[in-house]
Image (cartoon, rainbow, N blue to C red):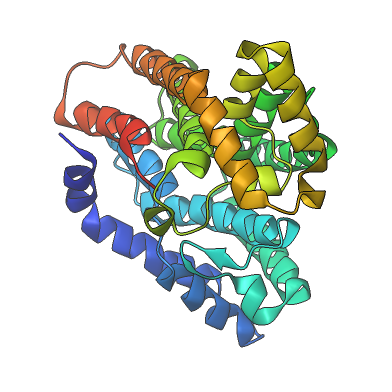
Length: 327
C-alpha cells in the first residue's frame, strides 16, 4: 500500500471535499470565490481531509457528514496558510503566486478570517459539542504556535520544548483533530478518540519535521520554493537545533552568528552552502529524519487497538508518506 493508492481510492471523495470547500468560500464579495478558485487550483494534497475520512472509515462511521467536516478541516488549514503567507511575506505557494502577492495583504488577512469564522459557523450547525471543542482547541493552539514562533524568530537559544510546541500547534494539532473527529462521528469511545488523536499528533509532528528537513535538502523545483526559506525568515527548526547541539563550539558559534545576523549577510547563497556543509558533517539531516521516523513508529503504536484491515493499511501508508515525500 502506498500514498498514490490511497489517493486513488479516495479520489471521488476528495473531489467532493473540494466542491464543499468552494462552497465555504461563497459570500457576497465576489473576491471570495475568486480567491477560493485560485487556492484550490494551486494544488495541495488534501492530507487533513484524508486523515478525517480514513479515521472515520477505520471506526466504521456511517455518517453523511464526513465530506462536510473534511471540508471544514481543510478550510481552517487554508485560512492558516493565507495568514502564514502574509506573516512570511511569501510570493509563492506550491510554486504558484501566493494569494497575498496577487490581491494584497489586507484582502488576504480578511479572507483568512472569513474562512475561520465561516468554517466554525458551519461546524456549529453539526450540533455536536465534541466537534466544536476539538476545532476551537485546534484553532487556539494554531494561533498560539504562530505567536510563539514569531517570539522565537532568529533565536538560536530556542529550546527543543518550544520547537515542539510550535510544530505541534502549527501542524500536528489540526491533523490530530481531523483524526479525532473521525472517531467522534463514528460514536467511538473516548479511548478510541484519544488513540486516533495521538496518532494524528505524532504523524503531524513527523510531517513537520520532514518539512523542516526538505527546506534545506529538497530539489527546489520539486519543493516549489527556494531552499533555506526557514533560515531567511528566522525560523529555527530541527536541523539547526541538531547542528547547534552536536557541533564543536567554534562551529556552533559561527552558526549562532549566522542565525542572528542572516538578514544582513550579503552572500546568502555561500552562507547557505556553508550551513548545508555543516549539516552533512554533523549529521543534522540524518538525526532530524531519525526523530521523524520515531514519531511515525509512535503513531503506529497508537492504532494497534484496531484489527488489521485495508483501511488501517491505508492510514499507516498515509502516515509513512510523511517520511517519503519530496515536497
